[in-house]
Structure formats: C-alpha cells, structure tokens
Length: 78
Image (cartoon, rainbow, N blue to C red; front, top):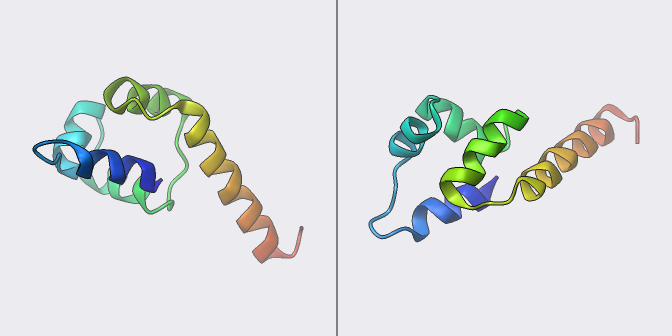
C-alpha cells in the first residue's frame, strides 16, 4: 500500500496518517497497517481511499491479491 503513503507525502503540505484517517473515518493505526500491507482493505474503505486520494481501487485490489499470493507461498500452498 505504499501508493497511499506516496500520495500522502506528495501533497503540499504533506498529509499525516492521522489526517488521512480522519478523512477516511478510520484510525491512524489502521492507515499505518494498510500502508504497511498488514491489513486487507475492504471494498468500502478502498472506495473511500479512492475518493480522498485518487488511488485507483484496482491498484488496491492488486496489492491485496499480492498479499494473498504471498501468504499462500509462505504456507506452501503455491
């Protein structure tokens, strides 16, 4: 989810995780988990992220698909 972090850092002035969390209706820790690919993004949250940041939902989906492949590989399923 580094695209979200990249978007935040590209804003002038930069937007903190706290501010983005407020805009998304979630917590700063959840934004951090998403940015670090530690948490899957729901479709509802993905739509909010797109509305706020312009980061396409499909790109978020790609990231969660990659997470699923990584988990499967680590578990020996792939």
